Amino acid sequence: MLSKLLTACLLLTTLSQAQQGPIDFEQYNPVSTLVVKENPVARAKFPFIDVHNHQRGMDSGSLEPLLSEMDKLNMQVMVNLSGGTGNSLEKKIGNIKSANSKRFLVFANIDFSGFGKTGWTEFTVKQLVNDVKNGASGLKIFKNLGFSVKDPDGKRVGVDDPRLAPIWEACADLRIPVLIHTADPAPFWDSLDNNNERLLELKIHPRRQQKNEEYSWQQLIDEQHRVFRKHFRTTFIAAHFGWYPNNLGKLDSILTAMPNVVVEFGAVIAELGRQPRAAKYFFNKFQDRILFGKDSWVPSEYATYFRVLETEDEYFPYHKKYHAFWGMYGMGLSDEVLKKIYYKNALRIIPGIDKSQFPL
Ligand SMILES: [Zn+2]
Image 1 (cartoon, helix red, strand yellow):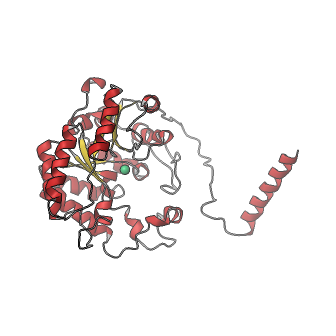
Image 2 (cartoon, rainbow, N blue to C red):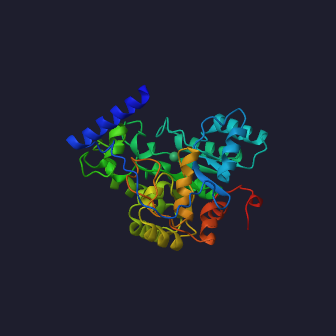
Image 3 (cartoon, helix red, strand yellow):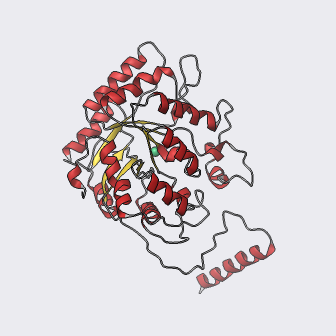
């Protein structure tokens, strides 16, 4: 009885608030009245390889709980980009081997401490060669390169710093890809006002706002592209669609100009799901250059990715309001294209994955 009363009171307050004045954008949460066919997808149509995942606790302990979560999604192989280097990488790979699992891959990372000191580049290349010998399948570069890595003079190290060139070349020699995350969504650099499409995200995560005048978004992206062009023997996986998921025409021209670059769509499916026709055209055109990536490990969120890729559903909700306050639409990709995105492209680009785990 009391709870009913309370609910009634709450309802009244909500109602009266709405009648009295403006409603907070954060609170406004209209439930769609649209009635259309719904085809939710909890499990991918084909076994897939997630090339953009982070697992910090892989050094020890059972991998069984993770495998059973992966099974539910039909995720056959997970690429853990947080491999570290040296000892910590060896531990992760040792643990995977002792579980006899072909279902985990690890990418090495670079230790930037001491960058620019005599011998740093040579030492780091040697370390990378060792990491690959120990089982690393690629190199992951985090966004700290460009943002916060400094040289001994305290100067920001650009993504295209020549002291890093031997590392990119070593990756070509080692035949491993470099998955690289540079910068962040461009609106993080724009002023925090009512017209900023990422206003909600920046209010929730104020530290994501870029107030640093030392570099612009475009400058970082240009630095990244100079590396792509200069080191054309190296395969680069541009994370998050190279931060052009909302400008596929531009990304088209980038991929056309740089044949050694492929992309993955971690954390940007909401951009694709709001332009299903342009995105489908793009996926068909670049069907050999797109990999499946998700980034944050929240198993329930994969359903949105599958649904955008596989179905032709209309105006269905995205899982995070600060990425998308708009509805999603499915692209309805063909099986042939889906197989490439889900696993065939990754099998071609990332070494050491057992192909027998996947359909032909
Ligand atoms: Zn990531």
